[in-house]
Image 1 (cartoon, rainbow, N blue to C red):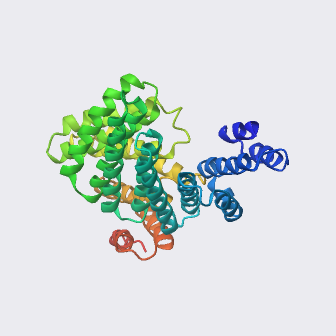
Image 2 (image 1 turned 90 degrees about the vertical axis):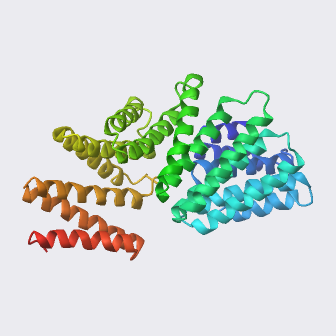
Image 3 (image 1 turned 135 degrees about the vertical axis):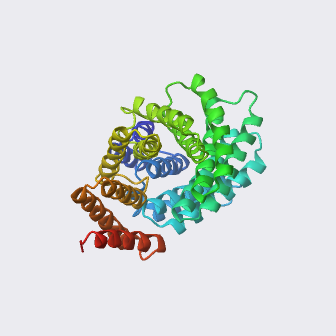
Length: 385
């Protein structure tokens, strides 16, 4: 059984499952250990490859719940874990409604447990993580205001957890900083630049302090770069392009220095492309056209590469496609101003195709319809159907 758990924890689901079956099928294994092992398997598998659980989940869930029925706090704990598993599986299958319901159900159970065991910091940690998971789903449902609220709740949960710890661990401090950073991003996406900048600056202060305690943690570099991008946007809008340029270059360096760690971190690569796109605009304002063109094409190529990777789940392909559509529109406009007709047509055609793909996947949303019509009109002005 321990060998099975070790295999699962190391990410080898095939061997882990085989060893688990071998253990639980042995009549010498006590039933309580077998049930605990199956619950542990569900938690690990739902984190690593949730789609594998679609067929077996209901059957295993019934078995686990029947074993813990009437067991007081143990039953609450098991229900919290199972709700978390169901939320992850629903999320992996694209059922955001069921996923959000699962995370909320899990959150309620963890909150009930916290009332019973207020000193248990692991429960507080799970409450914070559940808020963040729910926020991701809310964001995918385009409920950005709800996402920001949930991330604020997560930050408060982690801050409460830090107060309970005599000396809060760097990991808890990171979770607070990361929740604040993600809340800033939600506000920025809503257009609340003032609120976003205020939180982003708080996030930067916390993250820089944590860098000394966790110097090799890639998560800190990614969060820090994202917050610098938010602050740089505000500085650029205030006419402080030199300060904006410095922050964006620092953010890009942070991500590029960890490029080897981020090969499979699609969110980091998406952030890098976004920062390069932002910086290209700032450089264009400052008259550095050559560097502007180089960076915007690097951003374009990175976004194309992300879309070409079938294993990418986050960011959502539709989110990357939309960014690339807008970027192609910028490229087409710049080429047209530079009197590069064929180049401009190519960019506008790619822009049109991307909006068409978004119409196919997302339906007739106003933003998508307007983006598509804009590209059609630009091509028509150039005599191209």
